[in-house]
Length: 84
Image (tube, rainbow, N blue to C red; front, side):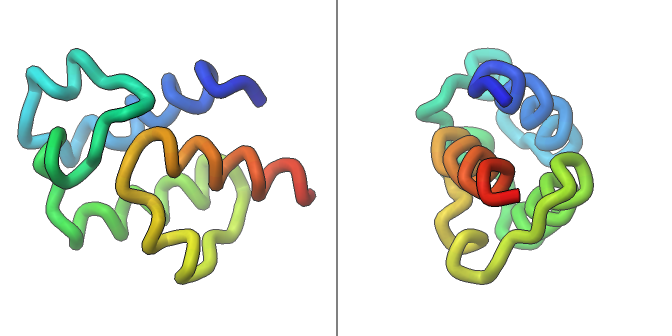
């Protein structure tokens, strides 16, 4: 799966939790969920669960702790999908 495809799906998944609309409109690979989109940690857990469902993967605690930016999530999804 291409990075761009993952980012588009991710954009849909994070939209309900975004507090900073301007940062969301300008979402890039370098966007940070907490600092840029102002998503709180409880909602980050929801996003992780949504990612697991959407991509049919299981995310362990180590990977979950790294999922703070779009780039990190894309890398984790690509790693998990390539293992299957």
